[in-house]
Image 1 (cartoon, helix red, strand yellow):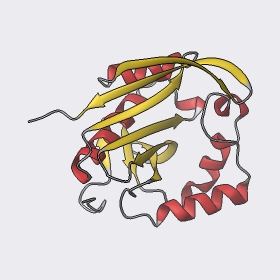
Image 2 (tube, helix red, strand yellow):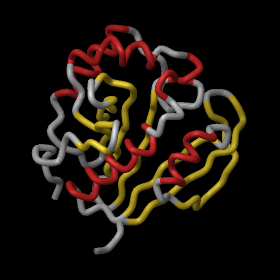
Image 3 (tube, one colour):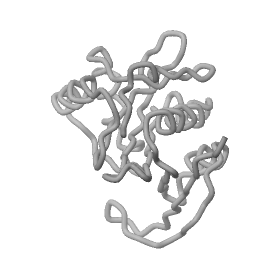
Image 4 (cartoon, helix red, strand yellow):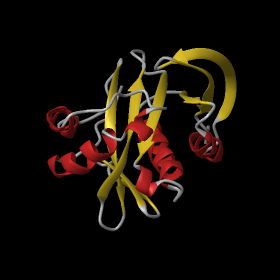
Length: 181
């Protein structure tokens, strides 16, 4: 069973808030999602303003994680709650495992938002699903993402060579198991 976001979101950890998207997020979302340097190591492609608006509109109406699908949540910087990035959560169809991906705008990197956003996403996953583990994949060149995952308690479980966006690279797969209390 997947529980709805009500009563779970927003999650604030220090100066970072994980929340649902709002239509007022479109300009900032479009700005960082059209940054070619940021897009280079991300699983998404740059977006037009119309694509950003449609995406935000769709995600703002999501009420829970979706079995077999991705849901994006906004990362806001407290106390203003202005969007500075987003976290995608994919829930396997059986809801036994989840995957996360995250983006923080260039101007808000190296401030701890990614690590706090990951912690908030884990809280959402553990509170709303029976998933026993969460995985993440990052390019070996993305040192900041590696640091954020490892500081959030993820273990590197696999390393492999691949071609990503036309470039040969090494990717690392990370895993974090649900902590039993």
